[in-house]
Image (cartoon, rainbow, N blue to C red; front, top):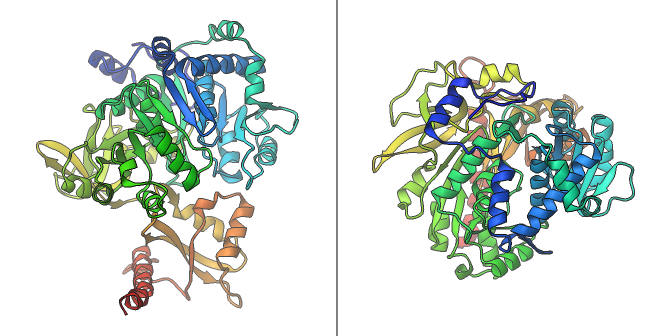
Length: 562
């Protein structure tokens, strides 16, 4: 397997030694991701590939549409290795757009529909993006106006492709379907024939969890990404009979690798939900009968308590839970597995049939036997023995070698011998002779809100610009629905009062910060508790808010018993 033929400046590629080692092991395919999928589509064109409430496309239909879209993108003037910001709701159009870009060699930048000016402006400029994929059918957000604003922030964004909804006849805006109709299949194939097919090249620009402020860009390469996607599918035996459904944003790394991507590249059916309402979700689940599902437990319980679904509707599906899978397994009586992963290149699962101790006490085991895992002292880097809690670091075929164009961050994020620092406190347990990992907290200062990692220092820096805030520290507070939410402890400017949630939300919205990052509780304090060395103590603040919440719940519990 040769090294990359046309290196992209700022991308850290695997070393020649790594390339040779993986080649000797026979791990990677010699095909790019779209070529591998095209082979599947050619063999089984009549199977259903993707479904949403508006209909379905077969593999053959999706292959033809994505080929025409790829040709149309090149016809617009986009070129292989150009970047495109993806802000598309979960839908058939998202899958079509991704495949069209992969075929054209255009690199998707995997942002979220919830991202706003702070994130999109930075990522568009940093990546040098030339296109912006959006949806304009969301009533609560003016995506078209936002895209216009981003073209002013990042002048290279020449083209806006509207995957769903009207274009409004804006210059430079192109409807997805209209764009496809400009290019027939023969013309598209002729254009795409000139695209360099290099399995060692970047396939997508994924994003870090944002634990160091605005998300960092992580290059994922065709060969290793395809390897990890297939490994995730093989771990659970996914094939053409698999029907997968997840409510998570589909451009996230975990859904691509673990839910729908592993299904799509196995020839199965992907079920999408553009409008995430409980009623639509229940209708889709009943209609398509998924065999692989990843829906947060609290949302699942609401569907059941509202009588939108019955337990019998769910027991046929393998349920994937990020975190503690035991409650979901006990509630549904369905096969349930836990998932842990990082976009930087590690995936751990438990397996169907694992005991409840594994589901509750571990985050599973690596799906890739070639991933090296080490637990080390977070301060000294010294290796720690099994069973001792420390920072988990890893290195393997799919692990990143460096963030895109981020030399300073790369010096911090890796060990001297090339292991990725996870920032997670873990320990190794051997169960039945197999390495499993426990999750014991985070080295990094983040709030994990329903799987979304929010960097506390980023929010703190933003809030310090508020005229009524003299000092602020943000910490996670326990929450039964999301696991954690953010609480901001605020010292107000003398002579003023601390802003309330409405005011802080309006302030952060004006800055362009995504809503899921906003604090969801404000506690006013005169000062912060201090450590023995005289520094503000976040652990003491975490204890304080946890105690406050317990005290608030106690009267409610007493009333319920009365």
